[in-house]
Image (cartoon, rainbow, N blue to C red; front, side, top):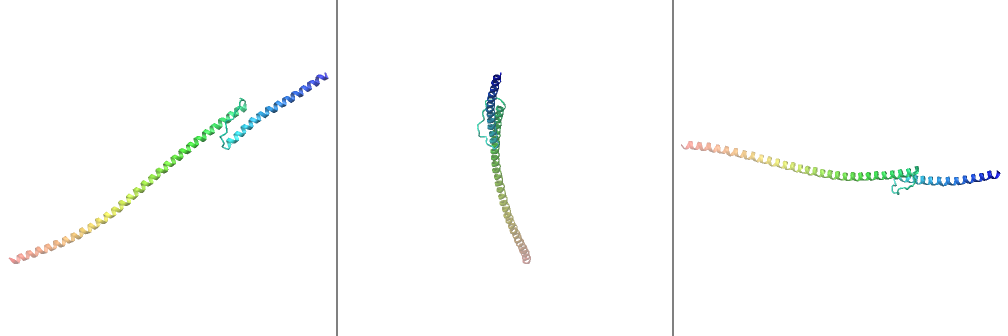
Length: 165
């Protein structure tokens, strides 16, 4: 009986050693997969989306975690692409708006230049009209003088005719 108890004790100790070794390897595998998942999450948090997707053959919680990390990385990558495309579209729109604003400014400058030229032309025309008005007044004064001289000559002729008769 003593031998039987000794055999059971040895078997129990041997079984405990085997179970501890199995537990050690199982925990090592789990922690290794968790460490890989944590490393991938740290890389994603720092903006590095270039790592290959992680692979897990298991369907346990670790496998689900790996799948969800891969899905999250793909969605973040897609979001970053959309942001880049939007930024490029915004830059293109900004360039078009700048070009339109430049064209509008050029058009305004042309209109302003034409307005100044028209104003200068109008000013010159006013000067010419003023000079023509002054010449017309001078001509009118001269015609009045001629008319007065003609009246004087008519009066003198009438007087000479009357004297001659």
